[in-house]
Image (cartoon, rainbow, N blue to C red; front, side, top):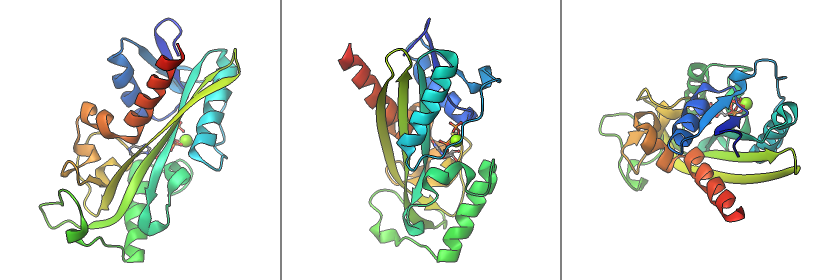
Length: 218
Ligand SMILES: O=P(O)(O)OP(=O)(O)OP(=O)(O)OC[C@H]1O[C@@H](n2cnc3c(O)ncnc32)[C@H](O)[C@@H]1O
Ligand SMILES: [Mg+2]
């Protein structure tokens, strides 16, 4: 996956870059992203699934740079919204919407649905304050690593289950993390340390699975 100890990740999401830099840094590898290659064309994410989009991002950038490239397509599936925003998570509140706008739209849509989770059905910790859990949800991450010399992909997927809370909390992570309550930890995803998030997150699990496949292929 590396050229001279460097992993190229086809992303323009600074939160993803931080998480990959943290994970690969522990392996002695550096991460570069599309921020380091400003002349790359924008990629239209028109796939029907997370993995189609991840493959498109990896292949487009790998063919432009003539290097092996890793890509991540991920998102939030909310049960009370029939799985939305799913593959549209980044642009839920509009093209290039901020995390704050996407989070506000998520709470608005759940309020419109009148969504609520019965506290006594939750296995694990519920919020100690009077904040509400609105719906079950899960994060999904598809990773694709493309090798332009062989024209082949290595792929992996990871998921993590939680609940959407009506009260954002925590300053870590990015995106929907402040609204994603983990009954396993009694905290939101944004309240976890980088190591804690990597250990349980959709991205951390997908990466672990990808690394196992790469080891087994050697
Ligand atoms: O396509 P790239 O350039 O990688 O960056 P992006 O932000 O557009 O990324 P995606 O297309 O994969 O959309 C994923 C969105 O899902 C959300 N998301 C993904 N992983 C997340 C995580 O670990 N924590 C919180 N939100 C996450 C967040 O809103 C992302 O913008
Ligand atoms: Mg995107």
